[in-house]
Structure formats: structure tokens, C-alpha cells
Image 1 (tube, one colour):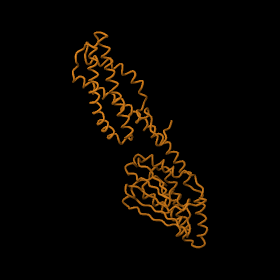
Image 2 (image 1 turned 90 degrees about the vertical axis):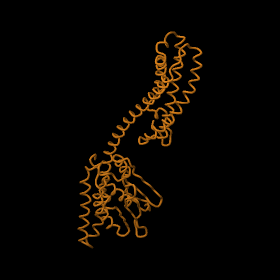
Image 3 (image 1 turned 30 degrees about the vertical axis):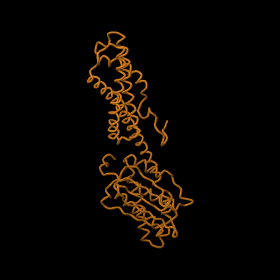
Image 4 (image 1 turned 60 degrees about the vertical axis):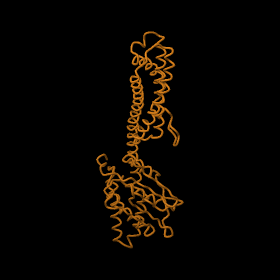
Length: 358
């Protein structure tokens, strides 16, 4: 069952497997092995000697096992992300050491009590400590190995899921890229320009052709340089400016030094088109859209919020499309924020080196 947001995961989810059966089987077996390591053949001379030592060994084993298990669960809850493995292990060690000392202190008292019922020599303190440390390392290794295996398996499944979503996002993107309403509005604008300014009409057609040529050319490309998308965006904005004139106000502040970073194709076009499609654009309420690079290598698109009561129809998959495609290439999320006055989308700029992967 899928875990709800904010809900604490179950113990089985934290550990990676149901360890109850493993504890039930392993503890009695280790309880039989440990007396031999401590007392060699003397442990098995008779049942009266063996049983108290076996019981004592089981208590030692289950105590260390549960101590390690508790520490692992607590630290995995506190530091669940893969990039926090250093903190998780470091704080686990800090908790295990005092737990080990306390357990040893308590178990020594129990051992003194057991000596009353079993005739066996006192085991070496060095040997006892080595076995205790071995048990802790063994249990820790088992849990971490299984946890890492499940993490590796989950990462493969996640990569496969993202790959499928990326392909679906591409298909959804192609459906929305050739927007019939955009084409209709552009042709309608052209009808008004032709009789008034034939030269401007020619330029308008050239820009329109450039937009659709770009859309066709980048269909097979997963990532493109920012400068290339901005060249396309210039033509795209030109077409809208001819339609809305000064009622559409644009501000672009992207230094040339940042324009070699990579972005997902048509992500800027989709965000600009969404802003135009969903907001009122008039002389009384001009729409302002800004594009700039902010600290942390993020491309931020803002537009004033003045929502239409009847926005142009769309697929309603645009933002989800962008998020899915960026999730495939970057560990930095697409951040979407509605402040009430502005709609803000922040895109991570992808390093040039990843182009080999794309």
C-alpha cells in the first residue's frame, strides 16, 4: 500500500524486510555456537552446563540484535535520504557505543547470576568483547546489506518508471506543441497585418515558419542549450507581441555566461504560452512576464496573476509534462509557486556534461 504524505513508514518499510522470522531462527542457532567459542568443548560436557550457557548466549544475542535494530530504525527515520548516509552511519555509531557499554554492564550481572547454576570457567574478557563486537557488526552488516540491495533495486525501478514517464511526456508534449489555438490566433493576426503593413506581414510569416520548424527539428532531442531555446523564444514572443502589442510586457535577463546550460526543449515556450492563455491581457490589465537566472543556477519565469474567467482550452498536462521530463535529467525539482499575485516556475539549469547521457 502506498504511504501517504506525512505518514510514518512501517518498521518493515524502514528495515527493508520482515526480520521476525530471521530473529526467531538465528538467535537459538547463535546461542548454540557462542558457548563453544567461549568455552570450547567444555560447553557440551553435559546438559546441566550447556543449557544455562545456551540461554545466556541467546540473551546476549537478542540484546545486541535488538539494540542494533533500534538504532538503525531511529536513524533511518531521522536521515532517510541516500545523500544522508554519512550522517546516518555516524550518529548510529555514536548511539551504538554507549548502548554496547550499557548492555555489557547489565549482561555481566546476568552472567554472574547464571554462574550459580552452571559449572564452567570464566571466559576471557577479550574473547567476550570480540564476540560482542562481532555480533554487532554482523547484525549491522545484514541490515545495511539488505537496505542497500533494496535501494539499488528501487533505483532501477525508479529509473524505469521515469523512462516510461519521459516517453509519455514526450508524446503529451508533441500533442500540445502544435497548439491549434496558437496557429488560429497567429493567422487571425496575420489577416489584420497584411493590408496595413505587408513588410511586417512577411516578417510575421517568417517568424511563424521559424517557430514550427524549430518544433519539428527538436522532436528527437531530449536536451538543448538555453541559447537555442531563447532564439526560438524570440520568434515565439514576436508573434504574440504583434497580437497584444504593449499589453504584453516582457523582461528577459539571462547573462550570456549562463546560456550554455541545458534545458528541456519547449519548456520556456510552454510556460510563456500558459501565462498568456490563462491570464487577462488588456490595456487596463497588461500582463508582465519575466525570465531571469537566479542564484543556485535556476531559471525563473514569473508572470502577474490576473486569471481569466474563461481561459483558452488546453490539455492541462503542461506543468506535469515539464516536471516529469526534468525529473528524468536532474535531481533538482521544478519548483512551482502561486503567491496570489504572481505565478512563479523555477527550472534547474542542467550542466553541459549531462548532454552525453541525453
